[in-house]
Image (cartoon, rainbow, N blue to C red; front, side, top):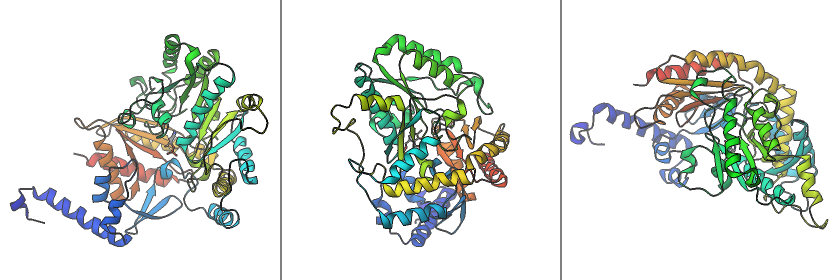
Length: 468
Ligand SMILES: Cc1ncc(COP(=O)(O)O)c(C=O)c1O
């Protein structure tokens, strides 16, 4: 590298670059990777250019911690990607997976199956509110969402109302990366490169100014459902297939529903004969302190999407769960008995290894009473995270269950900059925290200890205070 006199580069920036380059070569050496190998992977939802200058490599995980390539212990404050609430590398899951892969490594899921797919479907329905009991498996949350949208449209065709094709999503909603999901999704940055694929409209989000720094469910906002009535007046219920929302927005910044909001939503959907889909890819299996958001908030949808925690993140799996009457409608209108009732599915649906992982993961949730633990630790997280109120740049804090979102005031023209800087400072301090848009998010493992909550909140606070 040339010296700063020759490049006119300020000495502090030059030395920062030198440190990064030094760390990068150390990281590559410790991972036994070449630059060419680093370049080969086009990473998803990642600033590739930044990452490849400053690679953050995780090489193993146990309990609530990753180990990075330098051998540091990194606290996992997002349970992976909202996936691993029971903690990492649970031996019960490894054993179930390794037994399964050496016994039945793959089984076709079309026209044939294996016993565990039925056992698991039934087991999942035990975690669901009454009536939601017909499970179709997918391999991701995005596919679960697409499945629910397709089932909603097909259902209306089956009952003789084919004009019901429109979907209503919500601003700040995240529903994965496929065409349907990005159409009903409400995060602008995730939509703008692709344009619209489905006829959709969106409700306003509920992170309204009145709800700033609200602890748990805000009291203001149920009235926002009036907007749904307006959209029904505009488009007519005869054109609307379904409304899809996350009961608590996750990727949009952890936005719990206002008191009464989901009840109003349910009432309006029922009144106008519109299906209600809950995308519970984040909230199902313990995140909000109950088996599902539906149970926690007391509202049952017609269709639900799940993924992530269903296998504790170990093997990709998702699913769509339908009310029995929706399933029955397909069966009763399925034509000849030898014919399939819905032409839909994936090569890896109900993959036997994923089923084994999921059965083991759900057993852990139950045996270790992790859903109850998630609920029990929530007040401590609430107390601690709200202590960041008053810290420079913190413009809002939200929490529910073992999830919290901290919004930072935007740097001029760069809303995502400060959360990124905070996450990088936390990484340096030994904490993995999620940054996305103007928010820092946490989705703590259900196995978290109070001291760990204290430590991560302190690290976030310190990192925010270090910002210039
Ligand atoms: C609510 C919600 N829906 C869908 C998805 C997409 O799931 P996947 O990344 O498994 O496709 C996510 C992922 O974070 C999610 O949070």
